[in-house]
Each structure stands twice: as structure tokens, then as C-alpha cells.
Image 1 (cartoon, helix red, strand yellow):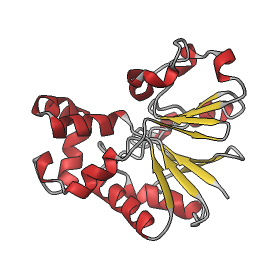
Image 2 (spheres, helix red, strand yellow; image 1 turned 30 degrees about the horizontal axis):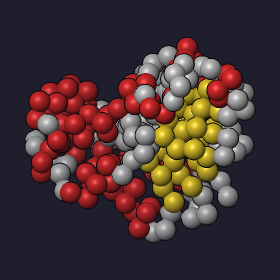
Image 3 (cartoon, one colour; image 1 turned 60 degrees about the vertical axis):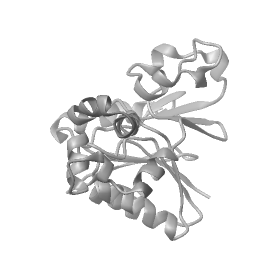
Image 4 (cartoon, one colour; image 1 turned 30 degrees about the vertical axis):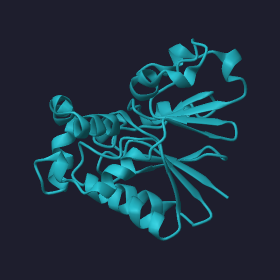
Length: 220
């Protein structure tokens, strides 16, 4: 059984589907998405619909909460948080639902996002969106770091981590830098699919967890 990990799809549904086809995802596989399903790209609704389709057809999909999902939920629950979400790409998500009001998004989408976990443990892997604060007694209690950290390697505590490996997204990294981390104990897999390809970014990466083999999926 294979486990595939994707992060930071950011509304790129066509690219997401292309990645699933590239690895020939099977019902015996598990797909883990490390947050930021939505915002910035043109089809956040489509990404969520693809997840519904997978689940409805018996595929195993597990969701980790990203900071963009957190902003989405905060905006849904508190009008004062709406502007923050808008300036971080929330406007594109609303456009994909053909509405200007978050309250018009059907309940099933809210419930899907709300079902996301802050982290997942898979064998010797810890799967989070952004990072883990290993400098405190309970790293899993620091939700701010889990969702927003930009320099997770600065929080490494090798004694606490032991032989485990952290897989995260959130901070876009060049392809070469991602590949160079595949033998390290903290691996970031976000290649910034919305960024300029000429600078080593611009793809959606999909990682097979047990083999640590990674593919970079481009739109063209």
C-alpha cells in the first residue's frame, strides 16, 4: 500500500487531477493533503469537488489543515477576519463558488474543511502544514507554528524527533532544494505552483512517503 503526500494545491484543480493520474492513484493507496487546498488559484471549489469525488468512490483521502483553511474558517465564523482572508487569495475562492459571500458556500464544503487535522502521524513520519516547535515540551500544542512557521529547521530538536521525519508544505522552495532535503529529517515539499517556473518554482509536487520518491507536475 502506497501513501502519497501533496501540499499547497491552492485552487489548481487541473494540476491536482494531473498529479493523481501521474501516480495512477489506487483505492489501496492513501492520499494525504497538507493543507492550502484553496485560495490564489482559479478553481478552489473544483479541488474540493475532486476530494468529494475521490471519497465517494472509495479512495482514502486525509486532510491536514493549512493556514489558508484556517483563514477560511475564521472568516466564516467571524466577519472581522474576512479582510485578512480576502487579501490572501480568498477572493479567488469565492469567485470559484460564483458568490461574493462566504455564507453562501454550501455547508458540505465547510464541513469538509473543518474535518482537517492539525497533524497526522504515519509510521515514522509526522505530517504537518508548516512546521513543528520541537523546542517546547509538547510540540503538537503549538498550533501557530503548525500552521504558519516559515523556518521549521530552526526549531529542530533531534533528541525529541529521533528517527522520525517531518513532511511539511507552506513555504515554497525550489525543486533542487526540495530534492536535496529528501535524505534529511525535515522535508518541505511546496514548490509554489503559482510562482514563476523560470526560477525553479511553479510545479505541484507529489511525494510517495515510503520510498520518498517525488514527482513535480507542471500545467503544460
